[in-house]
Length: 316
Length: 260
Image 1 (cartoon, chains in turn cyan, blue):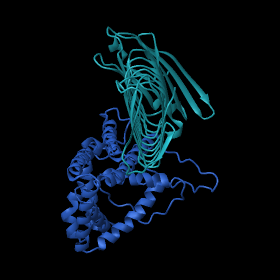
Image 2 (image 1 turned 60 degrees about the vertical axis):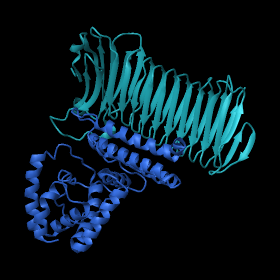
Image 3 (image 1 turned 180 degrees about the vertical axis):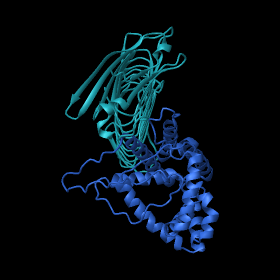
Image 4 (image 1 turned 45 degrees about the horizontal axis):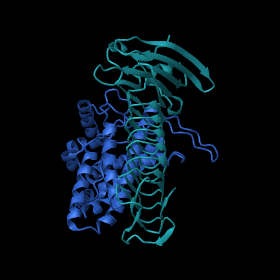
């Protein structure tokens, strides 16, 4: 019987066991499915750290107190599967750590990169904070309440229905956030960022070469920056809120609802369109300032594109 | 470069203390002098055993090494033929160049990665010279024995790359991408910087120097599955991210706006 999960779960005080181990063969290799349940010890599981450079990671919150780890291993043959490891490293004072690795001490045969992978699906207590890293794989998190740090290389990041502060970075993997209820600090080098329904106090996002598309955002502080890409934002401002949207080469397109006044300053290298009042600007022009509604507790809005267009509209 | 010169500089070369020009000239001599090459190999074995140089091997595909070795061979032979004045001038230029644009050794790795990726669909080149003793990071990088089959125009066979090699290549690719983006941002930031007052320029330069040093201080980790790893990859990426974010703010005009 293959028990590929290396368990050190006894320190958790609970039972950590492989419920099912299932090996299947298909046309392009063999697969092994492992399920391990980890019950908490005296202390609840407050944090979870996952590092998987060999495939995808999906973390789903649940109302239980323990972890359920589904490991899907794929390889060209049984010998390859034997070298794939999932390690569970509990720390009574820190996060439960789950990592994947290769056990190549016995024999050093080639493990073809495209044919070897480990995908992890983890059901975690909803109030555990997440720290997850993957390489080229997909990283998905949903239904969690304590936020976390998410990190990928080329892999995509997808987050849905999450509270708590989230810090996310990818190198060239797209990122999407939906139904977010905590602060967001998001960045990527060459990829796109998408936000839909964000309610945390802060939304800070930056991209070098890519687009930012944010809809249904209601945050007190919003800062979106792009060097090359365009930025589209639909937002509901809050009283005394601040909005900074900047692109060097891309267009800036902002539509807002506002419960109060707005202090706006904007600057565009090409066309500056403020509520239908179109003006042509240039990179050396001074800021164009405008005020809408009452000055008291007005939201401060700053829009800038060095070489592109800036468009601003107020939605009733 | 003479045998005496090689003898005097061999230890420094094996310790990675010679600059690129001197290293190239020394390797060029080793290519043509069997006696010096034998001595150097003995030294390398001892140094390698002491320093544990074989702990993290990187094994790029054959096509990469064949091409790289052939090109390096030609360049190094040319360096070996240069006069001392010429070598000194190149050394000086290289030092100045690094000060002006402090790209770390990672840049070299990035070039290797780019060459690697760009050669995926090319026919393998022939080996011009026998492999010779490499600098400290290189002895374990022996060229694979078999060349991959020549691809047909329509169907490019996927080379069977080992997963650890693939992960190492990915780490190099990411580092190269950071290098490229930071270079791009730096070029744009310098345009903005030229319009700033001297005090703001000095503050910018000092901060960039600090942030670049932070990147250089964290070595590139090409073995992300190493269970004994200390999160070096993450630390280096965070340092890159801070540098890129600062440059982006400069490019967007925020730094000078704050100063005013």
